[in-house]
Image (cartoon, rainbow, N blue to C red; front, side, top):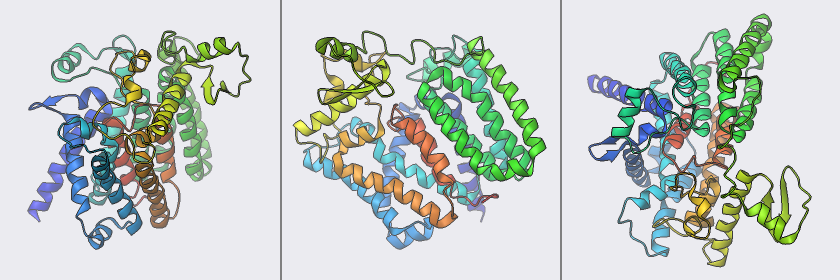
Length: 449
C-alpha cells in the first residue's frame, strides 16, 4: 500500500514537471540535455522500450488493463512489427540513433496508454485543471509580452540564457503546439469541473484569448481552432441553454478579451498572419510561378488550387511548397518501387536532400520533414505501415464510442490531426506526447457524459 502511494506521488510529480515543461516551453524544453541526453531523446527511448514491451504482453492481460478491443491491440502490434519488417526488407541495421528518430511516428503511439494510466489513477484531477489553466495563460503572456514577438522572440533573459546553455534550440511555442495546449487544458476543464458556469467560461475565455495568437502564427491553425470552437459549442450546448444569462455575460466578457487580445497582438483590430511566417520566401516558393511562365498558362483555380501536367499546384507560396514535396515523395516511391514498403529509416528522405531543391531545407537549413503525417508514414513505412496506422486511429474511435457511448473524442482528434497534415507535428516529440496522452485521458469517466 505504501509502495503504491509512493509510486503514485513520484509519477504525479514527474508528469507535472514533464507536461509543465512541454506545454510552457515546447521545443526548447525537450531539447534540454540531461547527462548527455536530450529530454526528447529520453522520451523517444522510453517509448521504444514500452512499445517493445507491448509486443510481449498477453492479449488477455492487455484487455484487462485497458478495456480495449483485441483488434486495437493487434493493430498497434502490427505497427511496431512493420518497423522490423522494414529493416529486414531494406537490409538495414538500427545501429544509430537516427533510426529511432526517423521512426518516432511509430513509437510515440505508446503514450496513448500513459493517458489511460493517468486517467485510471486520477492524477490530472481538478487541481491539475486549474494548474494547467494558469500555464496556458502564462504561455500567452510569454509569447506576446517579452522579446521580439513571437516565433523568433526571446524568453526573459534568465530563461533565454538557460535554454542557450542547456538546450539544443531556443524556440518559443509554434502554432501547432499552441492549439494542442489549448485543447489539452480545455479537456481537463471539461472532465474535472463540476461547476458548469466555470466550465463554460473557461472554454470561451481560453478560445477568445488564444485565437488571435494562433491567427498571428498560422492561417491553418485559425481554421482548425475555428473547427474546434464550433465543435465545442455542440458539446457545451446543454450548459449554454441552461445558463442563458451567464452565457450572455460570458460572451460579452470573452468578446472583450478577444478584442483586447487582437489589439495587443496586432496593434489594431485586424487579424492577419504575420509577414514572413505564413509565406515562404520568394526564393523558396517559385514552383507555381515557374509552371505558369513555362506554359504561359492562365489557370482556373479552386481556392487557389489548380491542375497542370498531372500535378496539383497552388497560387499560395506556402501551400505550393508543401504540395510540391508531397507529390515528389509519392512519385519517388512509385518510380523506385517503394510505395508498398517505404524507403526505410536509415537516412534523410531523398526528396528532402535534393541539391536542386534547396528551399526544402527551410529557413534554418535544418528541415528534413515533409510537413504531413500521412505522407511521412507512407514515405518511411509504405502502404504496409499506413494501413495498420489508419486502423489504430479508427479503432481508437470505435473503442471510445463503445465505452463512452458518444463521439466526444473527435473534438480532441480532429483539429490536431488536421494540423499534423500540414506541419511538422507528429514527427516531433512534444506534440505527439501531449496529443496521445490527451486521447488516453479522454477515456476517463467524465462528470458530464
